[in-house]
Image 1: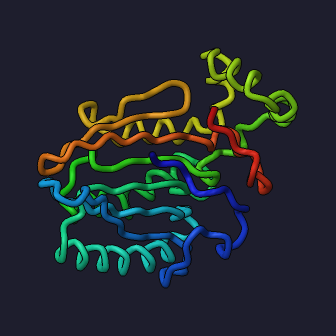
Image 2: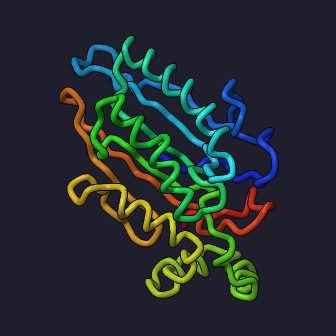
Length: 231
């Protein structure tokens, strides 16, 4: 199960969930391994977990400064033991615009998958608070949502109404378009309306199901911590 890291404000990088030497724009990277139980005959799976690129055209040069050594280190680790799955758990963009997703795809996502020789189906994407386009948030509507969604019954009622759920996710319009355009039809995850997706992969006989849950649909400002909802 993959969910974004707890939301933090958009100013500064000290609140990133992990600190890294790649500090120009504070991306986060770590490796993990899914290991079988003792006595099992299936191999483990090496997972590359990334987040917090905060891509924007104004920082293109800084992004290159960060991404090049990141890719170098990932390549070295991949030679030691191959990566089988990449998880991006939030904040690919800085402010959720189409141009920022195009930049992140150009500078990081395509080169990363190419270097690892992985198909698109081995990439799991989840939005974070920076992937929200705040210019699409209607203040009056947002105030109403915040006042209404104070209990499970109200939340369930919204999630079970496709039109209301779609309107609530307007702030993620560019994110959704980016995902739809990035993945080839055969590589797309299966959407679980309104705010989740699932993917099943097989690695050397190891069958893995992955659920990705979007809580960024309730992100609206610098004080989202503790206020995001899954359902």
